[in-house]
Length: 638
Image (cartoon, rainbow, N blue to C red; front, top):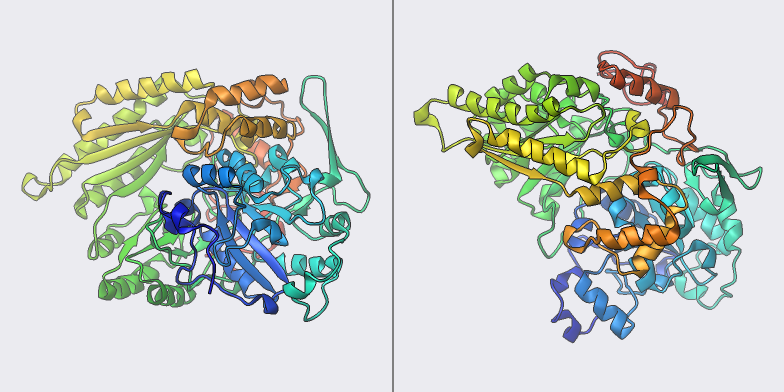
């Protein structure tokens, strides 16, 4: 029987003790006599956030299918338990076996958003693992990072032994085999036997050998130099056998890849408390602000038959009351109609709701909406991103006002009266007229509702929620060259937007929310930062910063103090204009999309020219070199 790492007394004093006890349905238990490698998979945020992430579930399933590997989970302890663990010197532990993380061979940390970087240090600190990779010895786990933020790993490079660039399903077996070889783990040797063996092993030799694997980046094997103005002069390997370019890994056939059809079911309600059915990866749209749209190119679909099988198994294995289709743009999935018909039949029988995120207004049919409403009706979410047509062309959103109103009209005819609209402020070349266009568009949608739905059929007043985030330029997008607005400009623009909404005839039907400006600025710093930022992150952590993604725990003044003490200016990474030929900290990574394509799209944005989507015409972005998905020559175009 498992012995919990926390006493009953501690568990009774912390919020949501179920975060820390493990033992959930679907969690994997293995006998230590059967495994030779232990892998701790970490999401550096609270349990409810981490348990909602599909990528962790996929890797958990993948690694636990290996007979010689036991993958366990670990999340950031919430602030109350963090204080107790520091006070009582309790090491951070895994959920499955309640084992201290420092006893594992690997600590894998997923990097989903920049504001979790201090939580990475929290996890390492509570685990008793040296925060800097250069300080780790033979007793310490190999710390590996992955996820979208690993496409610019430089701000946190000093904290990681290696990064896995790309989709995790392709190279982990090779990495585990290489570890066995360098650690001297023979066939049939298990963890218990290894504890009797000498612990000395060639850690640096393993890391150098790992750098030869496709998609693996070892920061300690590279060095950076800088110009007097602070821009990057060079970024080169220290050794001839270390690759100068690290190319992302990608799954070529999603039907043949691993998928968790019996995922871990949490004891408590989590952020995404539902079945997640990933229908495809990649996107055809080419929105110029969207990093994911570039990183996960080209579009690859799972077959309808595979998805039907997965859906049926997951409904049986989890008992969840909702199923969600996951992708960057679900309405672009070629088999959506067939899949929805199947789900309507199955979900109708089992009283399971269907959630349809990532829908495009121009592609959202009344037929689909009518099908979904038969089970349970909820609000519809659309993302016009900009209030004016000019700005939608600049960002290459591919939506006209007619598309937006036409889709809204279909929704109202289908019985909806709640609409959520997402916009961005601070986009390149934005004017006050563009900002006020957000309120005007919301008002037009409200008016359309009253024109479309007869009074006797209305279910109350139309409810429109307009939310604006502040634009953050990201690596591997056409806007990686764009200056970012300072926080005071963001707040001024939010005020203009709010005034614009208040001036509308239907203002009482429109609710307005906006994101925090200070955290957006810091996200922008970390997104396009270089190795020098590691000192800032470390200092901010030592000053008490973690859970920065949570507004109530973010301390902007402390971060600014850390920058001053490190002699760095945040504005260098945000508001500064970048030349077309500047060397970026992430340029050593190849995501398939070429720099030439991104620069061409940046110039198109400045000229207000829209570009075609991948199904209309190939734009020559470069990912056709992978030979998969809908790219020319890949075998199928749907």
